[in-house]
Amino acid sequence: MSLTQALSTALSGLQVNQASISIVAANVANADTPGYTRKVVNQVAIGGSASIGVRVSDIQREIDLYIQRQLRVENAGASYADTRANMYSQLQDIYGQPGADTSLESVYNSFTSALQVLSTSPDDPGARTAVVNSAQLLTQQLNQLSGSVQALRANAELGIADAVNKANEAMSQIASLNGQIAAGTPGDAATEALQDQRDSYIDQLSKLMDINVIPGDRGQVSIFTSSGTQLVGAQAAQLSFDAVGTITPNSLWSANPSQRGVGTITLIPPAGAPVDLIQNHSIRSGTIAAYLQMRDQDLVKAQNQLDALAAGMAQALSDKTTAGSPVSSPPQNGFSVDVGNLSNGNTVTVNYTDTATNTPHTITLVRADDPSALPLSNTATATANDTVFGIDFSGGMGSVVTQINAALTGTGMTASNSGTVLQILDDGAANTVDVNSLSATATVTSLTSGGAELPLFTDGSTPYTGIITGTGPESRGLAARIAVNPSIVADPSSLIVYQAGTPAGDSTRPDFILQQLTNASLTFSPNTGIGTVSAPFTGSLTTYLRQVISQQGEAASSADNLKQGQDVVLNSLQQRFNDVSGVNVDQEMANLLSLQNSYAANARVMSAVKDMLDALINM
Image (cartoon, rainbow, N blue to C red; front, side, top):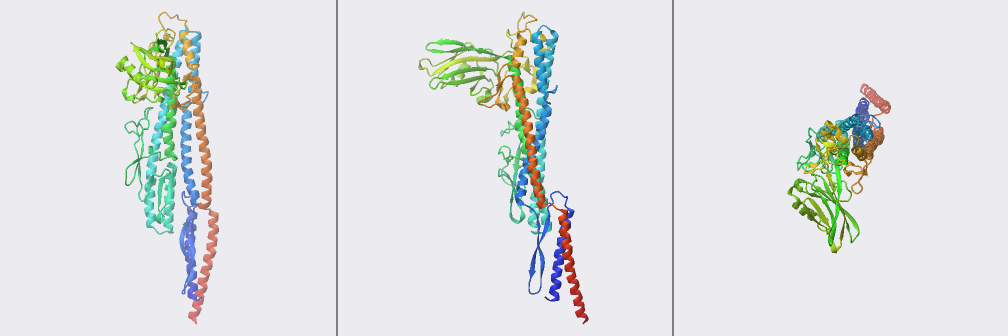
């Protein structure tokens, strides 16, 4: 090897050492910088007739791509679990600790305890006043709980808006960095630093929603939701969220913009038509998905549970069911019942048997005077496996019978009327159907109807009848509106007097109220999350309330357990990722010592070559 070749070789070694030392220094300086990944210098040998040596081929980030992909998946899962656990914790605080004086269950029990006292001392004015006061406390508790649930939904709405803004910023930065990386030099230190920045924004986005990152040409990436909707390519899409300012129980999400009462997330691509990401179920994990789950499902279900309790309290005391009387018009048989006192929302129930298969059936006829509400779904009532028809009574009994006969088409039964008395008969000699029973359930609106029933709990100041309109059932949001009948507040003796001349010590009505609120069996809608469509929950109001408290507690516990499990998985993956990609200062210092020795060796070679060249010149 000539002296010139030796000098060139040593110089190339010094240059590579200098680049490596610079990278080690950068690694140490950024050891605690979030998102920074360890860099290493890759070098290759060079050789030729004139010289041999070494050069830097590229600068490489130390990354395990598989762990990085898994980490982003778990980022979304952990954010989803953490957000839901936090909101369920707030919901638990709203319901109150079990056994606390201010909890819903304790307030309800205080009310029934006051009723027990009234039942034994109906002539005691103090006992009557105590019942009214405790009933008012109960309704106020339901009002406050409903308001708090809607406040949580409003917080979720704001959380979605904030998350959408963060997602737009992250996607914009990713697209910008994509362009800079494509324009840069592959393997260059500056380009690798840009990739670190881009990964940081991708990680931020992965916490907000579930994403899939696809590598492209020249170091660029494309980002899609896990359902396949593209978010970032050469350009970034934009997310739009039309948040609403006020959330009420009627503020529900709908694919129909005219019926939607909450914000929706619309993806606006650089080219093409906008896409509703909620309608397409495109966001399945991450912070945004958690807020959507709480706003549109979990908290709506919590509101439904409160509304069902309020409706049950009202209907248990004011609904009166009258059984139909057997009638015969040979060869036909059936039943008749007076429907003249049915209010909008009240029902008529027909039980019959298909004799060919010996199969029992139930038809529920619901008075629904709003044409926009028709036809009704079978889920309009809580009764299992019944067929529901809405009947508009506003046109008189002739129109009512015509509508009922249309509903009975195919069953073999026929309807007729005599004034307000409805009659339903079987098919006579054909004997394909037997009418088993006919009944009408009407809301008692008077305090002195002659029976124990009374409208103790009202919808605002009007009796609750279960009206169904085009905007939804009256039960929706009832917990926010339920109140004690103002007439009873003004005159607590109505808790005793059910007709003229009722003795002051008559316990008929107090006994009825206590029985209905503690032991009467009611059927609750499956939209509460308790029971199913085919097997709805049936039980007393006391039992139902315990089910509500228990389910909410279990849901909060499950959300917290999921959060803890996700945190363990995420922390484990983060540690594995850091072991590969993080900077270990001890390791870097060891590398620095090795580079120092290499640098010194190359410098010594150059010094020796200099001495030899000086000697040759002096000769």
